[in-house]
Length: 237
Image (tube, rainbow, N blue to C red; front, side, top):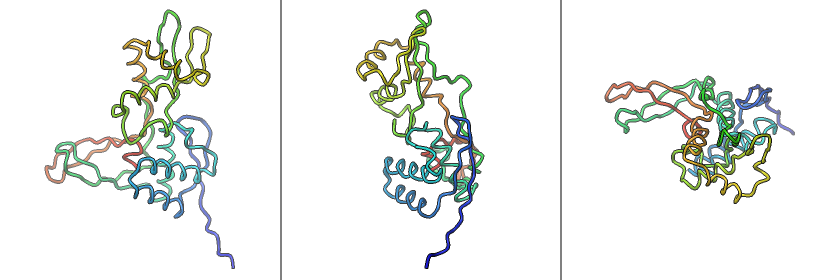
């Protein structure tokens, strides 16, 4: 005899990077097992794979997580988690005043949002006289180790990330799509840039949208109060 089926509620959200509602549901025991097994391995690739599998299932196959910007992945996962295990989540954070004492904090994760720097732009001007510039896409979850900040990524990996994020290079009305350029052509182009150009490109990655929340914590030993920033999957997973 077939067992009764359990109804799962559905919700909608709007992704930070695009307009339109995305339908989603809380994760079930099946998806929770995927996340738990990913955590148990302690491997970054397993965590990413687990999160992508859960997002794809819980959004009814509407999204391919590996094609989305990292900040979309972060936002989607947190929204699913809020509806699955409760909006108030407990986290253990280290106190900044002594960098050794941990304390527990509670956060309403349904109110954590993606934040963008006011000066952020994905259009980088290389030579204003020639109207020469580059337009960059946001990194996807496979682009680099999201457990680390861009500052912790090795130099060659940073350049590989830049090459992979090129949407197009333009000069006046002439457009050179990134997908039509070889890796060697991209290397030659970016190796010819000056230091200011590189700083401007780096600024794109440093200021791109990210999921973050600032909270006040009190060291239980010293009673010192400090502000702590939780950022990205590494802090909210």
